[in-house]
Amino acid sequence: MIIRHGEKPIHHVGSAQGILPDGKADAHSLTVYGWVRAGALIELFAPSWGEPPAGLRRPDAIYAASFTGGRSKRALETVLPLAARLGVQVVDRFGHGHEKRLATHLKAHPGVSVVSWHHEGIGKIVEHLGDVSPAPPAVWPEDRYDMVWVFTRVGPGWRFDQVPQLLVPGDRPYPITDGATEAQPDPDLAQVVRDILPS
Image (cartoon, rainbow, N blue to C red):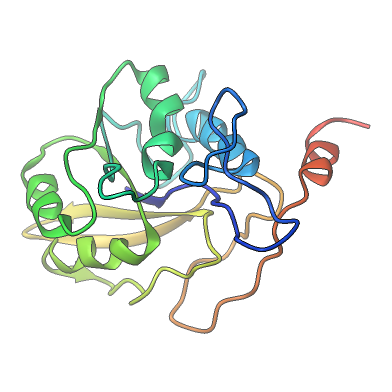
């Protein structure tokens, strides 16, 4: 199961900024909205009661792109709460440019994995998995943080499905396609809180 990391800062005036868990500003970290998603992923993949939604499974291994060469911490931050719930260490020895090595490793892993990665590298992981049917979209859109790409072993290849996360306001229920992306406004934190809390 491959996800994109949670929401990142958009570099224009008045947009959400990246923050560390202690609230300090950090351009390499998730926005508040991204941290909300990271927390919500716990109940998506490892619910307190019952099993994950149809199409998903409880992972026994979690991978995240490493923070190397000044790249973002967001892939790791996105899955840290889930890893804590499951009591597993996040494997972060693969980074940008190591997608082929990661795919080779995943093909040899017998269990269920979640991979948190940067959107521009997800297609590179898929390229190295081998035969995948139906073919996934060629590009993960810049404006989508809300999808899980699921690869299930079928013989020597993989069956591809998409499962919407539907975790936070603004998440879309339809899959990623190779068509044009829809511009998604930078979420307003006050509106997010109003949407989540009962009136």
